Length: 534
Image 1 (cartoon, rainbow, N blue to C red):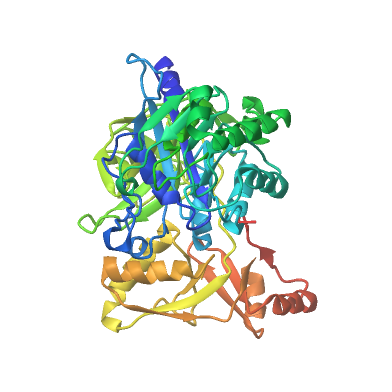
Image 2 (tube, helix red, strand yellow; image 1 turned 120 degrees about the vertical axis):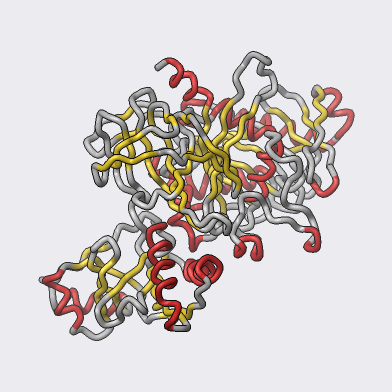
């Protein structure tokens, strides 16, 4: 198994997490540009000439300029200083939705990565969604690299941002590269470990890799004057405070290497790639339901973390993303689906680069592989070769928004039902039904209301079904049982539904109605749903 061990060492699998508008998709493009996977970045200044990024493939994403679905990109990268004989690093980058309404999709991605890049807007600093996602990383023991983005625009000072991160989330930033020039006047980076200066030159619209000029401290001082002096003094202050990189503390989740960048201008992007290769952990073992660790060199196993359909209108297929946990994957191998015990053929396996795909013949721990038309698979499922293994399921978030959905015309019912089954299996929303409302008007349960917009948009574009969303007056849900359902259905402001997985959910108009019923009927089963977003 030495070949598997060697392949594991080359791999870095990470996600980019951020608040909306922090530049996450633009950074994804910039990383792919530096890896020579694309020749020109997808984000270009000016509304008239703006392109959608390669990682945003849904029409809704392109129209709004936001990411509402996770996508996976894989590319090779050879850091500076590596010899021609060295195998390149294999980067598995999973782009995630930035909007809070899609935090459940982001959480699924974070179960499949070994590190995270926390992208922060230089002007806005830490924002609520960033804080929430960082807490998920901390809970899962995922080390975090911090990138202060948009340094080409006016913003806070470096020390203000460092203090804010330290105070608000208890993570000590250890900048590897310090900006030369205030926010809005980004000239280059001081490499704190070598003392050298990296000067960047802008390219037209930031569409190409920004040329770099590296010089020693003396030359940097002659070129940049007071700006270099200020950066050097603040860097020295950080050293006195003990804020230099320590690998053990980073992997333990106590510190975070920090880089300042402008993804739009492609400044600091190479430095991020090199940091990921040098410092981010390679794939490690994963603990199964029995508490046993499945090591990367053990026989094949993988976890499905996302299911997605509708990525290409010309191919009405469904793609299940699996993260390889252990062993070597070979296309065509027959594995076992842990949830059903049935064999599963992997003939149609693909590597994914945004919306584009290519057949993949082999893959190793850390890689993300798409399985086409894997209708039996759902997020959280395990695939394996003997010995048997099953990894813990991926918890669902507690929904907070509820609406009924119906097709505008009865003659589209068949397509409507097919579309709802598809979106339900992907985990786009939770679908609830009861006898009173029937299949023609299911209730959708979501973390955020924008999920409903995704449902209606995809039903229209993929199944040619126009639908109407009717918001319901419910604000929270509790798991119940058949013995309690009859009494709950008799209560005002309560309605009981069956979720697709068979769970009975009672929906309540508000927390006061719930508290009243719990007080008056203490014998009823009312269990909180898992709320991993907190």
